[in-house]
Image 1: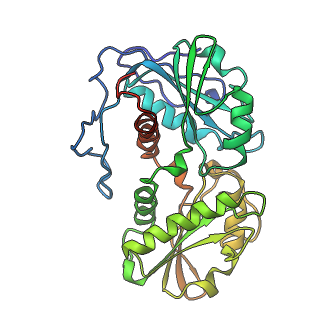
Image 2: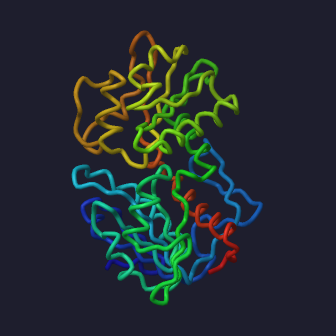
Image 3: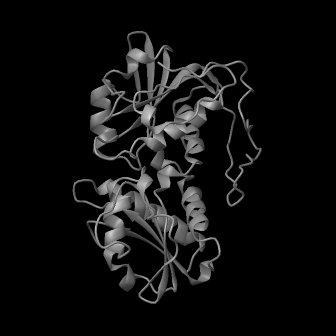
Length: 327
């Protein structure tokens, strides 16, 4: 088990990431970067968005377990989870920060043997509620509900990060980042989800995000589009009317969908390409297709500000279940 010593941050290494557990030991509850208090604003390096962190979390007696899907085929699938865990560990909010996966190591079934703290927050790094958050994760972790008491531990099962209301701000931030110089009044924004009859909540999540952004009047057109149900992302030419089209995949990682399937459906690529980390599909913007400018962003879950959404998810759990701010 690799530990973060006080004040030190290890270099992120994707090859080591699959078997690494991040553990942070605290020196002071106010020692983390960018501490945030109720009513104050958190200052990010990137000025395009200003997200309010509602309180300072002090979880020096708690562990955080960030749960991802993982993949045996896609080397980029687990990268965002490790990156966000690394950032949270660096802030010294929790006594321990761990990652666990369904399809990679460390596995869900072994993770609690690695956790030393008795108070544990489990946050699903998933874009929406569904089969994995409702069935697979609780089954594999042997959870009995939102709060499980077992073997001296109190396990607090949080909502998936995609449920956080601040995902709206991250989507707008990512859209502005990928197309910084386009006029919103001449731009169509498409939030892309998977869409499948097997998981209706997946489509609902993207639709809800698009609806909220549309209500803000941030872009001329805002809508959800899907890979496997109408409105199809492959029909973006017919379903948008503005000269600029910005496409943001509503996924946690740059997996097979975002770097292989969607580029083909958009007409960016003629055939599936290599892993996202090995090619330039997200960096060649804009593309000039059908007389319009098409901007394609990487998955929203790769956004660095997701670390703060994870912390906000823990905060909302405490608010909902009546826990104090300090564990």
